[in-house]
Image (cartoon, rainbow, N blue to C red):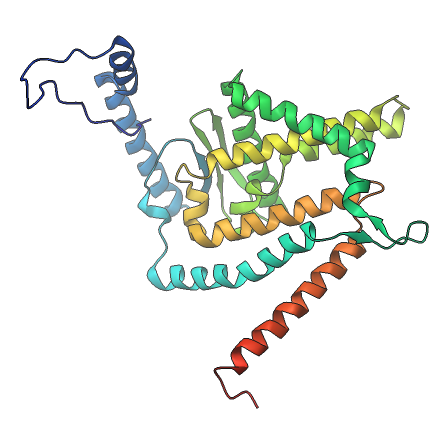
Length: 320
């Protein structure tokens, strides 16, 4: 795969006309970033085969959903101007529920309960045992991510979960999978069906968190394992943070999944879905946020937005 090339620094200065030696570390870094002739030919041949396969797949009525690690710049995924305009307008409209969903989550102060009618939701949540184990898992994964220990292995796991999520939603939407590939350089799933849900689901569905949750449910059916709840909260925190940090790492790398539906629209949908997912996780924590409290706060903020919009428009338009 090709990486962005850094232009060579001038070997001669304009003032002294003396050769300035570069440090060995800089020279080594530049040589490492510059592909060899064999690698360049191999990459060009790989891209040519990929384009030929894509044309053959389109003749068979197939398409691909894939994750790219390096910049791809495929024009195949560019929308037409009318489609891009429509998706951009939809993205702007979705900013409203995105902002409201965020504010509704972080502005809740009280949760109304019969036993504790004025209990502070955030103090209850932070002091709860599930949140403590969740937070420990979160910090463990953050430390592991930034330390870059076994980063290639984690990258492979992320791409594997990414493509398996594509495949899962292809089957949910009634499609068929005819090809599947996963590497640390990216991956793809060949299918006869594609839509927004299929394309964007890996960016807001934490695949490995779902695997952990389903495994926990199966274990509960057959065995009584001590500290299973604590292990579940710890692993959910670890896997959800794994999903979040690698998704944030992956998005800037020119993803075809985003370009297929319009990058701005896709990013807004991904953000909204992840905020709602976070709210759901917090609502599932005992002695914390509740669905009713979150929905009530969301409705109050939405009505405040409607009222503010009406008052603003009434200053400039004759609404009565």
